[in-house]
Image 1 (cartoon, rainbow, N blue to C red):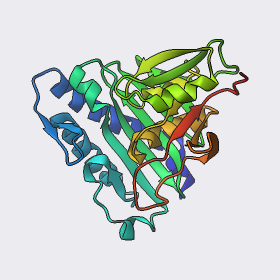
Image 2 (image 1 turned 135 degrees about the vertical axis):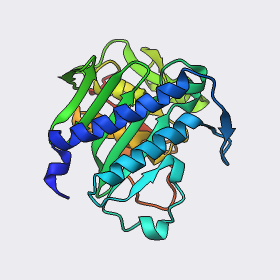
Image 3 (image 1 turned 30 degrees about the horizontal axis):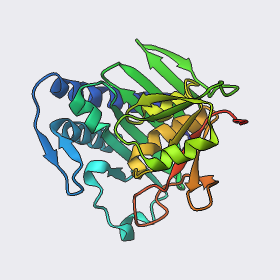
Image 4 (image 1 turned 45 degrees about the horizontal axis):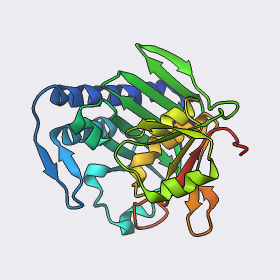
Amino acid sequence: MNKKIIEQKFINKINKVAIDAGAKIMAIYEKDFNIYEKKDDSPLTEADLASHHHIVNELTALDVGFPILSEESADIDWSERHSWQTYWLIDPLDGTKEFIKKNGEFTVNIALIHKNEPVLGVVYAPAIDTLYYASEDIGAWKQESGVAQQINISAKAENPIRVVGSRSHQSDAIAGYLKNYPNHEMIPMGSSLKLCLVAEGKADLYPRLGPTCEWDTAAAHAIVKAAGGRCVIFDEKTNSETEDLSYNTKESLLNPYFIVKGPVINE
């Protein structure tokens, strides 16, 4: 992979792709829109599709030769996909339920995967005009009102520990896991913004013990990594953490359970 792909000048182009996709989403957000059901019963809106088509067209126009895998075009067979060394992985609208509820907690997500790891990530929350972006070359950044500042995980976990969790997905498994941390407070948040809160030091921990797909996490995972955090696979049977989350290593695009970790937590 050409090193220039993860440098600031190139990332600025990806940032613009995400911001422009966000504008298309907001144009639909501000009016009445239709809601459809996908085969897995998850919701789909015109905004998902408008963002998808924009991102795919713009990434293709960059002419860097990388294939594209999107939530809205995920039917690429493993026989083709397994040989990909470098590819774009996108979620055009993460947090469709948040979009439908109109609570603003939804994001555009664009990641570049190289050798099964996210090496570039852009997450844009158009309703609050907040952009997160990162690469191995430049670190992790947050941009608000056009002003960018570098971000990092907290140097030390807070007391009580700040645990970010989903607004739309709660489970007994999470309640069981959090018994390991009796002194904690919950921060509800939607979409990939949960990972970004850990990356910028506003949360210490995000346990996800439920179904997600690779496009849900890849972009924000890159940001967490560049900010000094980790996304670690969690084995519920042994109640233990294993290796870091990776991408395109199997036919299924479902992630295993995982924990997003900021600072070391001593309980």
